[in-house]
Length: 165
Image (cartoon, rainbow, N blue to C red):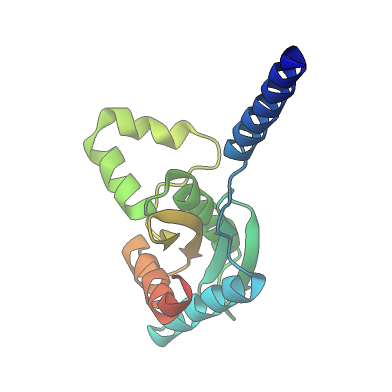
């Protein structure tokens, strides 16, 4: 009887241990809705239009997968590809593409980032954050400079900041 009790207790302990170990391997991640992605893309295009710039804006999730795209009337065809690559780069690096570009210009080791497929080191890609978590990024292409592209993205994120909590 005593041996049976020990085996039952050991089995129960092992089952609890395995359940606890399995629970630690599952993560929860925040993600943006399609509605929010569309709001960010629309607000980005509108912010640039207010400055007289016809741009494309692409919003990606944390994995760099496209969630929303908007292209202003008269935006050049190249703006779609550049906005997507900037968004992907910002989501991947969890940093603005302008900061990445400036680091690459100052640091020869960072300059090698240009050799990574899909990385675009031009200003205009901005991570979308909830606290310290990067949940995606917005990329903008088409304003006269990457700094102006980034300003449009930041203006859009400012408009939706209450939803990023």
